[in-house]
Length: 280
Image 1 (cartoon, rainbow, N blue to C red):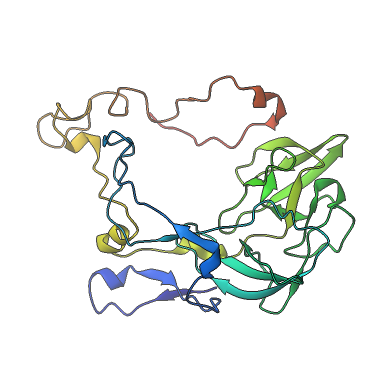
Image 2 (cartoon, rainbow, N blue to C red):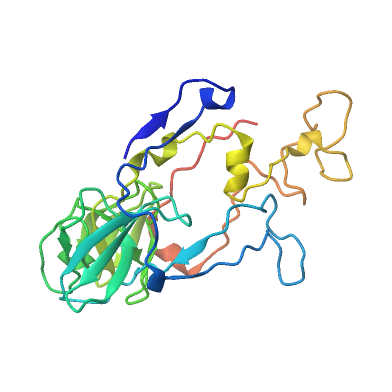
């Protein structure tokens, strides 16, 4: 994948940087692996906004992704690499030897015509192959990790992401996640080898507000420019900056406050994720 930049023929094109989509080999999804996706506009079943700044956007179909990789010991051939509007990574269409087709997340280093396999036995350590963590050598980049055996991959699924095995102590592996968190995951949980593709996704600049609207995002307005009736930090004379610690519209501190409650899964966290330095 590469990033495409434009000559500044218009003010917005001056800052636009988009994917060149050169890795995409098929423009339309596999019909049998899609299902309808209804846009909510951020509203719940009562019609009330529960997620602000969402609405509009292009119509999408959901691509059914095989996060479980439970078709074991059967090789699959890569048919195509496709765009998925529902995630930052690319997806890959596989065809198994029994002619069944499935989508998986596309890792770096796989191309059309390659073969991948999922197995609980010892197999080659190469991108796209899925296996239990106990069969993966320490230091190998992995993605699409399960947190519970047989539940399917839940973490490390976005563009450019990968985790690493730091150590193994029966029955858990010490996994370093992209956030910097080190976590215990059972060694019988499945993981896929390799780093997720579309690495330069973070270099994309939409360039104009309209492109953000196409993605279903509405303008996000700062609280300090609202009226007092709309936000705790609103109002004031001129360009006043709120006059209090930054808070959410409901009064909760919004910079640096830790909101994670005590959870059973805390005992699996060896090292907390990197926290941003907050200046007040």
